[in-house]
Length: 334
Image (cartoon, rainbow, N blue to C red; front, side, top):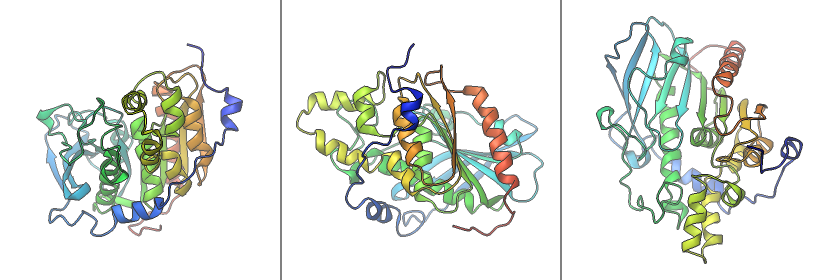
């Protein structure tokens, strides 16, 4: 389908006014302040499970997330690995759960630790133990997650999700088999937006790989995206016609294009020019505002699937090169 968004040349030059909301940094400092696990007496738990595989170990993960409530995940490692490993922390796309113990083996097969975070409220398999979202304000007027708690930044759904993601990075950084100086965060769509937010909130990351990222320049996306999830915002505002300003104020605290201005780790983006879910101009908003070293792979004739396995090959090469240039060790250098 032909692109209904800006041309590639226009996207590369696109730098819209996107005012930072009042108290943005203070809001996140307060949200993430205090004990690393929200004051919870629990600590991250990694329990090995039988995944039926010989070459990859899988651990069932539980990390105290927002308000100390448990967030589930999988940690996968090469079966015979020794010494601290570089680690890829992955956040998932909209509506996806962590899946089963034997899935998503690419990063472990490449020789890295790989932590997959289950997104609260979006897990699909009770058999694997998903992560519920039972916080007050977790219900929404419009189906989906983007408008949950949208009346105030303090109650918004992504405040909890971003905190969960930060806590998962902290947990794996402290794992004895992981090199804390070699942690890369990544994700597709929603996961890419979460990765960008984490890159702005967590110092000392080795890299970030946002893949066709969601949650970027949300005001524009809500007006031009042809497919969900951004259409949830439009549906909400069809019901509440007087709340446009307050809705976009709330969402500005969770806009990955704002967090990108705080991120300094090297970044590899992917953007698809025929993407009707995450329009390319919104993704380029985050890319053009990104404060650290950056590169982008553009898939001119693809939709939200982006580069798919072609881009996985790009990511494998990028991470290999990135880690090769870093000293090993347990010290973290923010």
